[in-house]
Image 1 (cartoon, helix red, strand yellow):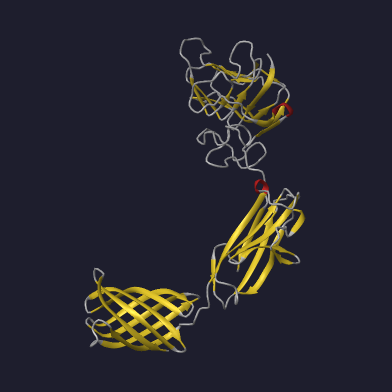
Image 2 (cartoon, rainbow, N blue to C red):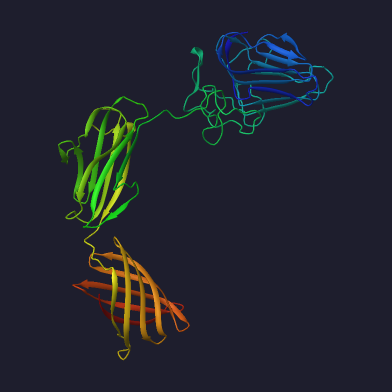
Length: 434
């Protein structure tokens, strides 16, 4: 037999007999890169030796071979032999590839009728990576397993291996960890083989505006702070450290000497763990209204340029709006219909304001529907606001829209009243004092 490799993993081979009376148990687990062929077989407590990674039973026994990796010192493929008609061989989530045997079955040879009575045992063969002599069962693959370096004992899966997420999560006896004690299932399914592939560690930058990862809105009376941090995941390679701001008035880059329009990194040197570090703390007053996008990242190709294939970055968005007037409080005054000049009445509005967001409770008297009440919400832009919401009164309901402008301690504005099915009912003006 030519010496090649076998990588048996998870429940590499399980022969489970219908009855375990008189059963012996043979277990091999957590073995990687062993030199001698796995040749031991067991039958009712009696050990036999079969040439080349072979297991056969002629009694009622349980055999489990879990998380096995073998290197190129092993000869031949794998073979499984069953004797009792009631036996079941369950073979899941294994790599058995690139072997040569004298008598066929280069990857896997199965003898399911050991007693020669013409009735074979049940063989379950699922989610394995076998050699080109494909076994026609569900989800077995025949492409090369793409191990990192099996000839030298490195049985880790490469990132492009078809064995990744190709295993069977319902296989019997799945352990919690792989052969390196890493979590066994990462992704939608476990991997075929003893190794559970995981992405290599990468640096994780983080940038926050006023302590938030999400977009925020600030007005001219607010303060803007920008903080950055880096989880280097124990990586220490050299990198360009970048901090940039895309503003309504241009693109700027942070350096320890200040902000510049030149494309230069803030720092060049090894990656390290960086706790929250404040790089900006300024009043918003005077900043032009618009959208500001801040970027923080590291480029592991340290050459003073941004190499997108090797850069890891995070962003945060800040929306700056014009100065916001304070509309909070209770405002009282009168309304007058433009369409029906003979109609007028009193208005009371109590406004709550959080930044540029408003909510208001409104009471209006002397309408065609008697006194109506409404709960409105809206936003502020500078010294103007818009509010909208549902009203009810006199057995009717509808929508009320108002907009107003603050000058000194007086609000003047317009209203639009809709009834029931949003029929446009009235339009007019109002004046309020706080």
